[in-house]
Length: 340
Image (cartoon, rainbow, N blue to C red; front, side, top):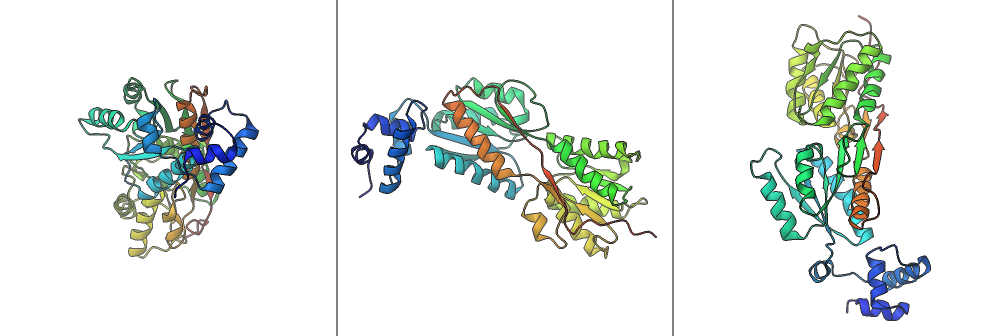
């Protein structure tokens, strides 16, 4: 038979209320008591009935992750990171894809929150970058943590996890410049994503820092997709001024650019260097493997979930901001410019 909260309380020599406080990670429990209860929980393999707990109590013990992102690897890493935090802290996770452009977005999200008794939400772009959307959520008596591209928190609406795409983009572009590249193209993601804006700004900043003229014809608008990399690279590699390097706004775009380059008989990296961004499995599954920026998505997601759960428990985190800067990872898809 499955162990019950009564079994845990009896074996640990504490009250049922104390076991409940430990399982809810409430700060009022002394550390020795917490350790004793958790040892019994582990020994009995006790699993609290979270659904029943949500219905019976005044508190909600579920958080939600809503997203509008076509990158499957990013979504999986986000889910895995959030689930790690939820399992450790006794929360459940509701995953809810939404269209940021939907005319009834607010209605859909409002109904989801009310019907599922959600305590809080983790928002990724483009939702996290929309202050009016965040304000609406806060009127529903739920907590919010936002993951946003940038190095400064845009406002004090909710705690944030910041990703410094700008500095990472400067590093990638500088790496290409240090290899002797001057004709460096850029294939962008969706314009409405701040990550695209920040990565483009970093690319332009590195060029300016090295007195390299910015050629707008080498900047291709696109989406965060393999097809966008294919189309963007085709456009660049059939133009009058062909680049010697392509900075792709994510690894999926870079994989598409690499694919079409090889179809055109262009040697990578001897005749063309290609970089990605994010260090997703795409960057390691291509041949040659992609130079990229390592964005620890699972770690970012787990920290966002921990921050959200702490906020739900009213642990004074309203103005907390945590930052990550993706780090350059040099692989086989970039090399020095070969003269001639």
